[in-house]
Image 1 (cartoon, rainbow, N blue to C red):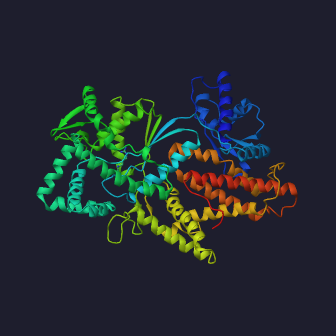
Image 2 (cartoon, helix red, strand yellow):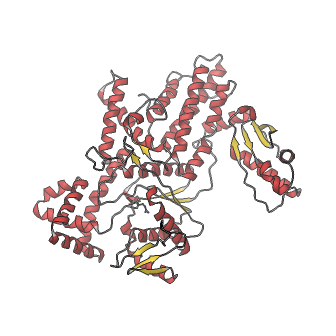
Image 3 (tube, rainbow, N blue to C red):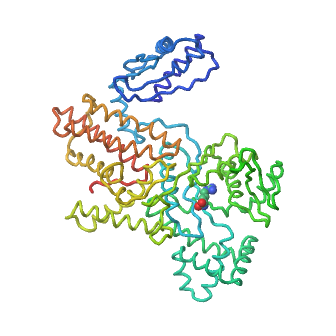
Length: 581
Ligand code: ARG
């Protein structure tokens, strides 16, 4: 509806341009907002005020001219001028009811589908040398939710799990794997099942033995020069590490598959070319033997130039080098219109630098948009980065297991008589959803405190609250299974019906905000408000005990659309719904 009003205003503007009221080449940004106070209508625009300068007219007079130029429209009941020159739109209630009926009968909830784009989404992207830890949780969950929403809008989404599968640390790991296997194959297999311990043990060997360290360094060199034996070892190691990641994805209900893995190592063959091409453009400088690029806009705190390092003095390539190659691949091969990077905000400067460089060096199509969707840190109760009691990194698997256990207690306390199998089924959904939702519902740019108590609460903007709200709405239909709704009409008479209807009509707007800004918390906030609007409606408007058959059916339709919207919304967040809990 909002975009509909926008398009009416654009038509009015065109008419005013033809009449010579405003210059034909003037590009106005037409902003339309939902009003907070419904006595001011449903939507408002400040367009007249924006145009006073170019039109040299007072805003109220201009507002009247805009209104006079608006095309006839059956969905708009009334248009008014308010205050200094706002234009308020009152939507015809029948039009709202019609919109809601369309949503109810459409797979896409009646949303306006945008022009499809090819969108590359870089997310999760853990480093394979170690176990996936909580730091990768945010990228995985937030990225996956935006991926689902983009696909729902009809875009062609290409997932890229840009795993860290390359680098000098692999020498140490391969040397240790080799050594362990020579001593005891079974032991090696067992140690590899916990990469955290494996990494630590390898590091100990590396630090204590010069002989071991030399072997590790030699292995890196052989690996990089394509030695078959080393590459086989390396592939085996990465395969084990990746299977740990995929266990976590499966538990989390994340849509990444092995096909989506395209790690740093896949760009190896292109790195030399990256250096050559940057050189050919005259962008490379030499700094202490390393090849670097200086860009004017990047300086250290002290004002010294801050380069991107492309190749180290010893010939080694860096994280930035593979990102340059990856951007080129995403543009030239994948033909991305947008490339989104769900990566910790602490890498903000890195992305600003390489994005800028990719444009200057013409590595990418100039129309391709590069967007770092950065996120803050997940902290513990003490406000510091989340750690185990002994100060180690928290493994994702352990965290999810704890969430399951706590959810089971919670569900059992609400349903003391439920049998164990059913309890466990419900707890699994509640536990995982709570962890995911706690992350998704916060603005990704801010740090947040990870708290099991808060995320498993039935009060506030939490997964248990929403899952429960859904079971309540769904429950109405269990009791209304035999009512035929085929001839039902939606009528919005009561204020609470209108409020709920208005909320339901906003789904498409919220979704497009989530997708353009990469902000699932917009959708979470919306679903929370929708559940609240349903609650107020349900309190004020009896459904099954309505005054008339028509009213009952109309209210059932509203409930049905609420259930459908909640379910769809949660699905886009990667959260399963339950019929009872
Ligand atoms: N592996 C990196 C890390 O864990 C994240 C990679 C993000 N993607 C990228 N194209 N740089 O920090």
